[in-house]
Image (cartoon, rainbow, N blue to C red; front, side, top):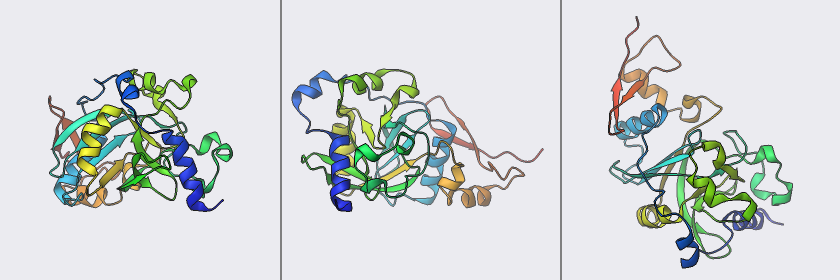
Length: 246
Protein backbone atom coordinates (compact mmCIF):
# COMPACT_ATOMS: atom_id res chain seq x y z
CA UNK A 1 0.00 0.00 0.00
CA UNK A 2 1.40 3.37 -1.00
CA UNK A 3 1.41 6.31 1.44
CA UNK A 4 -1.21 8.17 -0.60
CA UNK A 5 -3.45 5.09 -0.76
CA UNK A 6 -3.09 4.59 2.98
CA UNK A 7 -3.97 8.20 3.66
CA UNK A 8 -7.08 8.01 1.49
CA UNK A 9 -8.11 4.75 3.17
CA UNK A 10 -7.71 6.24 6.62
CA UNK A 11 -9.69 9.36 5.78
CA UNK A 12 -12.39 7.37 4.01
CA UNK A 13 -13.01 5.40 7.20
CA UNK A 14 -12.86 8.56 9.25
CA UNK A 15 -15.35 10.38 7.02
CA UNK A 16 -17.34 7.25 6.19
CA UNK A 17 -19.91 8.35 3.65
CA UNK A 18 -21.36 11.25 1.68
CA UNK A 19 -23.80 13.53 3.48
CA UNK A 20 -27.45 12.84 2.81
CA UNK A 21 -30.55 14.91 3.57
CA UNK A 22 -31.81 12.08 5.76
CA UNK A 23 -28.69 12.12 7.94
CA UNK A 24 -28.74 15.91 8.15
CA UNK A 25 -32.34 15.83 9.40
CA UNK A 26 -31.47 13.32 12.10
CA UNK A 27 -28.69 15.46 13.52
CA UNK A 28 -29.53 18.21 16.04
CA UNK A 29 -29.42 21.53 14.22
CA UNK A 30 -28.87 23.83 17.21
CA UNK A 31 -25.33 22.80 18.10
CA UNK A 32 -23.81 25.93 16.59
CA UNK A 33 -23.46 28.59 19.30
CA UNK A 34 -21.10 31.22 20.62
CA UNK A 35 -19.20 29.83 23.58
CA UNK A 36 -17.09 32.03 25.84
CA UNK A 37 -13.46 31.52 24.77
CA UNK A 38 -10.90 30.25 27.25
CA UNK A 39 -7.92 32.48 28.15
CA UNK A 40 -5.72 30.48 25.76
CA UNK A 41 -8.19 31.02 22.91
CA UNK A 42 -8.28 34.74 23.67
CA UNK A 43 -4.49 34.89 23.55
CA UNK A 44 -4.56 33.44 20.06
CA UNK A 45 -7.34 35.78 18.95
CA UNK A 46 -5.32 38.76 20.14
CA UNK A 47 -2.09 37.47 18.58
CA UNK A 48 -3.74 36.80 15.22
CA UNK A 49 -5.36 40.25 15.19
CA UNK A 50 -2.12 42.07 16.01
CA UNK A 51 0.10 40.16 13.59
CA UNK A 52 -2.42 39.53 10.78
CA UNK A 53 -1.15 35.96 10.91
CA UNK A 54 -4.19 34.76 8.98
CA UNK A 55 -3.30 37.06 6.03
CA UNK A 56 -6.95 37.91 5.44
CA UNK A 57 -8.07 34.29 5.34
CA UNK A 58 -10.80 32.79 7.52
CA UNK A 59 -9.61 30.68 10.41
CA UNK A 60 -10.71 28.39 13.21
CA UNK A 61 -9.37 28.00 16.72
CA UNK A 62 -9.80 24.58 18.29
CA UNK A 63 -9.58 24.13 22.06
CA UNK A 64 -9.03 20.42 22.58
CA UNK A 65 -9.49 20.56 26.33
CA UNK A 66 -12.94 22.07 25.91
CA UNK A 67 -13.68 20.15 22.68
CA UNK A 68 -14.86 23.40 21.08
CA UNK A 69 -14.13 25.23 17.85
CA UNK A 70 -14.48 28.95 17.07
CA UNK A 71 -14.95 30.05 13.46
CA UNK A 72 -13.70 33.48 12.31
CA UNK A 73 -13.97 35.23 8.98
CA UNK A 74 -11.02 36.81 7.19
CA UNK A 75 -11.41 40.03 9.17
CA UNK A 76 -11.27 38.20 12.49
CA UNK A 77 -14.96 38.48 13.31
CA UNK A 78 -16.26 35.51 15.26
CA UNK A 79 -18.98 33.76 13.25
CA UNK A 80 -19.95 30.95 15.57
CA UNK A 81 -18.60 28.20 17.78
CA UNK A 82 -19.45 24.53 17.97
CA UNK A 83 -18.53 21.31 19.75
CA UNK A 84 -16.15 18.99 17.94
CA UNK A 85 -15.10 15.37 18.14
CA UNK A 86 -11.35 14.80 18.44
CA UNK A 87 -8.74 12.08 18.61
CA UNK A 88 -9.42 9.62 21.42
CA UNK A 89 -5.85 9.82 22.75
CA UNK A 90 -4.39 12.83 24.51
CA UNK A 91 -1.31 14.28 22.88
CA UNK A 92 -0.20 17.11 20.64
CA UNK A 93 1.89 15.34 18.00
CA UNK A 94 1.09 12.77 15.34
CA UNK A 95 2.91 9.47 15.55
CA UNK A 96 5.61 9.06 12.86
CA UNK A 97 4.20 7.40 9.75
CA UNK A 98 0.63 7.45 11.07
CA UNK A 99 -0.80 8.42 7.69
CA UNK A 100 0.64 5.31 6.06
CA UNK A 101 -0.81 2.85 8.56
CA UNK A 102 -3.97 0.80 8.04
CA UNK A 103 -6.51 1.63 10.73
CA UNK A 104 -6.11 -1.79 12.31
CA UNK A 105 -2.46 -0.99 12.96
CA UNK A 106 -3.06 2.34 14.69
CA UNK A 107 -2.62 1.88 18.44
CA UNK A 108 -5.02 3.62 20.83
CA UNK A 109 -2.27 5.95 22.09
CA UNK A 110 -1.57 7.08 18.50
CA UNK A 111 -5.07 8.44 17.90
CA UNK A 112 -4.16 12.05 18.60
CA UNK A 113 -5.24 15.36 17.12
CA UNK A 114 -2.01 17.34 16.65
CA UNK A 115 -1.62 20.88 17.99
CA UNK A 116 -0.24 23.89 16.14
CA UNK A 117 -0.91 26.06 13.11
CA UNK A 118 -2.20 24.29 9.99
CA UNK A 119 -3.19 25.46 6.53
CA UNK A 120 -6.68 24.21 5.76
CA UNK A 121 -6.69 22.85 2.22
CA UNK A 122 -9.85 21.73 0.47
CA UNK A 123 -9.90 18.09 -0.55
CA UNK A 124 -12.17 15.10 -0.76
CA UNK A 125 -12.29 11.55 0.44
CA UNK A 126 -12.62 8.54 -1.83
CA UNK A 127 -16.40 8.73 -1.52
CA UNK A 128 -16.31 12.21 -3.04
CA UNK A 129 -17.26 14.15 0.07
CA UNK A 130 -15.54 17.48 0.59
CA UNK A 131 -13.18 17.76 3.56
CA UNK A 132 -10.42 20.11 4.68
CA UNK A 133 -6.94 18.76 5.24
CA UNK A 134 -5.08 19.91 8.33
CA UNK A 135 -2.14 17.56 7.87
CA UNK A 136 -2.26 15.45 4.72
CA UNK A 137 0.81 13.38 5.61
CA UNK A 138 -0.69 12.40 8.96
CA UNK A 139 -4.17 11.90 7.41
CA UNK A 140 -5.73 14.48 9.74
CA UNK A 141 -8.69 16.39 8.33
CA UNK A 142 -11.69 18.44 9.42
CA UNK A 143 -15.02 17.15 8.17
CA UNK A 144 -18.67 16.54 8.95
CA UNK A 145 -19.46 14.09 11.72
CA UNK A 146 -20.33 10.58 10.60
CA UNK A 147 -22.09 7.87 12.66
CA UNK A 148 -19.43 5.30 11.70
CA UNK A 149 -20.49 2.75 14.30
CA UNK A 150 -23.75 2.98 16.23
CA UNK A 151 -22.00 1.99 19.46
CA UNK A 152 -19.80 5.10 19.25
CA UNK A 153 -22.84 7.43 19.46
CA UNK A 154 -20.96 10.24 17.73
CA UNK A 155 -24.00 12.46 17.23
CA UNK A 156 -24.96 12.06 20.87
CA UNK A 157 -21.43 12.87 22.04
CA UNK A 158 -21.61 16.25 20.30
CA UNK A 159 -24.66 17.21 22.35
CA UNK A 160 -23.35 16.37 25.83
CA UNK A 161 -21.72 19.02 28.08
CA UNK A 162 -18.77 16.80 29.08
CA UNK A 163 -15.78 17.33 26.72
CA UNK A 164 -14.46 13.89 27.63
CA UNK A 165 -17.30 12.42 25.59
CA UNK A 166 -15.88 14.09 22.48
CA UNK A 167 -12.69 12.02 22.33
CA UNK A 168 -13.59 9.28 19.90
CA UNK A 169 -11.89 9.74 16.49
CA UNK A 170 -8.58 8.51 15.09
CA UNK A 171 -7.36 12.11 15.03
CA UNK A 172 -9.68 13.89 12.62
CA UNK A 173 -11.83 16.82 13.75
CA UNK A 174 -15.56 16.11 13.36
CA UNK A 175 -18.05 18.99 13.19
CA UNK A 176 -21.86 19.06 13.32
CA UNK A 177 -23.15 18.80 9.76
CA UNK A 178 -25.17 22.03 9.91
CA UNK A 179 -22.20 24.03 11.21
CA UNK A 180 -19.88 22.60 8.57
CA UNK A 181 -22.30 23.39 5.77
CA UNK A 182 -23.26 26.92 6.74
CA UNK A 183 -19.92 28.21 8.05
CA UNK A 184 -16.92 26.02 7.24
CA UNK A 185 -17.85 25.19 3.65
CA UNK A 186 -19.19 28.68 2.96
CA UNK A 187 -16.10 30.49 4.28
CA UNK A 188 -13.26 28.13 3.39
CA UNK A 189 -14.15 26.33 0.16
CA UNK A 190 -12.67 28.95 -2.21
CA UNK A 191 -9.36 29.91 -0.59
CA UNK A 192 -8.98 27.57 2.34
CA UNK A 193 -7.87 29.08 5.61
CA UNK A 194 -5.96 28.36 8.78
CA UNK A 195 -6.61 26.12 11.77
CA UNK A 196 -5.04 26.91 15.12
CA UNK A 197 -5.23 23.84 17.36
CA UNK A 198 -4.46 24.51 21.01
CA UNK A 199 -2.22 22.01 22.82
CA UNK A 200 -3.37 19.92 25.74
CA UNK A 201 -0.05 18.51 26.96
CA UNK A 202 2.69 20.77 25.57
CA UNK A 203 3.21 24.44 26.43
CA UNK A 204 1.18 27.00 24.45
CA UNK A 205 4.34 28.78 23.32
CA UNK A 206 5.85 25.51 22.13
CA UNK A 207 2.84 24.90 19.90
CA UNK A 208 2.88 28.53 18.71
CA UNK A 209 6.50 29.78 18.93
CA UNK A 210 5.67 33.17 17.42
CA UNK A 211 3.26 34.00 20.23
CA UNK A 212 5.90 34.50 22.93
CA UNK A 213 7.99 37.17 21.13
CA UNK A 214 4.86 39.24 20.56
CA UNK A 215 3.85 38.95 24.20
CA UNK A 216 7.29 39.93 25.43
CA UNK A 217 7.54 42.80 22.97
CA UNK A 218 4.20 44.25 24.01
CA UNK A 219 4.92 44.21 27.73
CA UNK A 220 7.66 42.10 29.35
CA UNK A 221 7.05 40.78 32.84
CA UNK A 222 8.90 38.61 35.31
CA UNK A 223 6.69 35.69 34.36
CA UNK A 224 8.40 34.21 31.29
CA UNK A 225 6.05 31.25 31.30
CA UNK A 226 3.03 33.45 30.69
CA UNK A 227 3.95 37.05 29.84
CA UNK A 228 0.58 37.91 28.32
CA UNK A 229 -2.61 37.58 30.33
CA UNK A 230 -6.22 38.27 29.48
CA UNK A 231 -9.61 38.94 30.99
CA UNK A 232 -12.72 38.15 28.98
CA UNK A 233 -15.61 40.58 28.82
CA UNK A 234 -19.26 39.62 28.98
CA UNK A 235 -19.46 39.16 25.22
CA UNK A 236 -16.61 36.67 25.23
CA UNK A 237 -14.13 38.91 23.40
CA UNK A 238 -10.67 39.52 24.74
CA UNK A 239 -9.27 42.53 26.53
CA UNK A 240 -5.52 42.28 27.13
CA UNK A 241 -4.27 42.92 30.62
CA UNK A 242 -0.52 43.27 31.04
CA UNK A 243 0.52 42.51 34.58
CA UNK A 244 3.55 44.36 35.92
CA UNK A 245 5.85 42.58 38.34
CA UNK A 246 4.79 43.01 41.96
